[in-house]
Image (cartoon, rainbow, N blue to C red; front, side, top):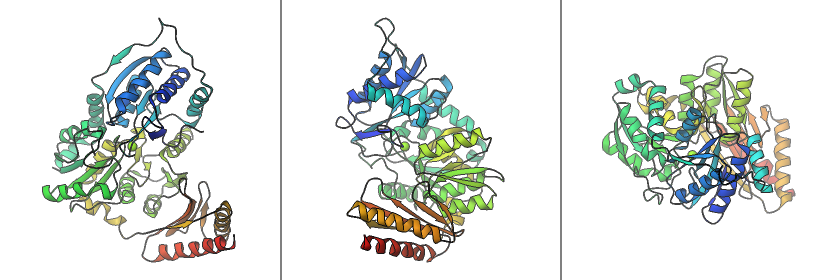
Length: 454
Ligand code: MG
């Protein structure tokens, strides 16, 4: 595919991602979708309304009625899609900086479109073959005021309200000026938590922090946790499909550790969990301890969702899946990442333990990442050939769907070329100290030798 990447279409708004382009995407989607109506939703970006108007115009031109949901988290738009049986054009750039925007397409089942369905849209888009309606068949616009309220109600019905309310928690919340600003504070209050917030006014300029929930952007949240003696800190990205956590001391908790804790609570014998090839040893260990299988996909949530769909067709139970960036899926609830739902599931774990106690079993892992730059395609190829050679000789379980991953039981190493920079990355992780750095150094040396000979 050329247009839709692993997270939809993204670009600097009004330069790469223009209103005219979004209009054509909507024309193509409206042509492919066999529905009477479609919804349009957006996050809080300054260009969101402009691009949502383009999307609405394109859908109406193909004869679909358009439900305008306004600002809502991506998972809220997905809940609407499933409830009403309409597909959605979601205007969001998720965690990207403020000048970006993007488009994500959601099917009438509430799940992001499969690769096959996206390819059909892309074919129409590239060929500019759109089935437009005659003047008297163009779509009408319906403004939907209730989508956020209904989303919150659905979340409340899906989690263990009593356990969370009984835990009597103070939650420090940083929705990062994104779409979660309009839903998560209400949701956690209705769960019986005391809620304190930072960056909780929707603002497409993102004055308090950038939309990506990484430690460098979340120092205010750590301070808020300490100042209010909160039990936990929660941060979302711009469209609130991810949740990142701070412990009761105001310390950032690794997304891999909270994923492992959530998985440990849900995984049973015979279950399968799905993650990407850079999955943490923590999840490897949790799967093994719970006699569950761990399936690895190429990096990116679209690949994980595709794999879960395949496993569902084979009648496998996948209670939990996701990546260490705060993007967690609970497919029994919905085949979608949902930051508010994920956070509530974490709050359930705080009934019997503090946040730091919950992730304590997943501390002490050593993570290493090394970058090897290359200046020519020959150097790149030589390094990847060396990685393949190393993998073939290693006493480890190989996975080669996206780079070369070697699982040793207590540790793993992954060699993978970057998709955006001229570097080959070496990742390693181990349960104990020093093992990961030794593994990474051995692989780095092998690759560096091959590069020198290229
Ligand atoms: Mg997101």
